Length: 365
Image 1 (cartoon, rainbow, N blue to C red):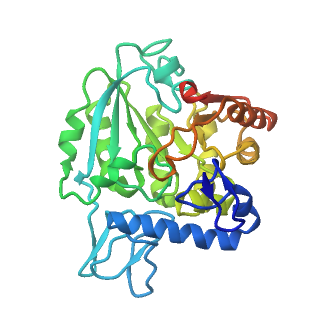
Image 2: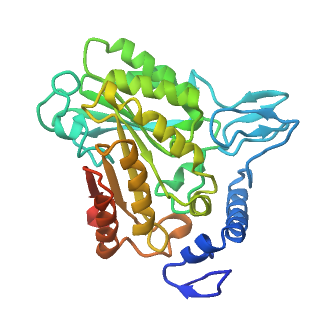
């Protein structure tokens, strides 16, 4: 049972770590935001990460993502990778990165596998090896060790143990991992955003070396990178038959900040920007949205508002509603219930979206 620090009510749907209920987040946004940012700062400092986004007027700017960090000498950016070293930004390179990877047989448990080439064969023969699921082929799943958000329910939070390690992998080693059975490369994490210079370079080299066959480039991201980098990942995915899967974590900005430590303004703008590219390649789907149904926080109201937003852009955009598994600082919350999943599904369908699915159904209770 968690206690809300504003209304003082206890509930199994209030995270003990966050200490805020959904009603107070919505109704007392200024107070809730202040409390939530203090919670994020305390947790992040234990990792050795900046408690808040560095914003010094005399700092060196990093224009990679929504955070727009301005770091003084010796200071790290919010992601924990970029650092001001004697007036120069270091820690992120185009030739080496902090990451790991593995080969995942297709079709795989991907956010978009129910609509993508690897899971369905859509786009055959230009973008898929088979008319159906690409059995016998693999996805090269690449996991960068950093993130521009700080989600209290992060499902892969262990990557933070590696963020500060002085261990880098060269582009050549990652590119050599692409073999004759690799049909797609998917960057997830963490998040690809902090290491986009490296990941874009690796993608370009991989595509050049495999230009006579199908090799899709896909991204699973919070979508909060700068517009210039957004354009680059969009171009790679469009040309290769890949997709961009953006996690729309919440609609309400205060709720998004409470859960992730960061605003959702850039994510929504970038999602809208990418939606304008859909007519250039409607099949296979270029843009996919997802939302994690966090009990007590991401309810049918949130999902309905997100779905309405997506629908105004393009009702054909696939939308995945993902079941929640208790993790990280929200491990005290229950898993997503079947009732919550059905309510969220109904809200999304009622918005007018044509392709909505509940994923990770095995986690529902």
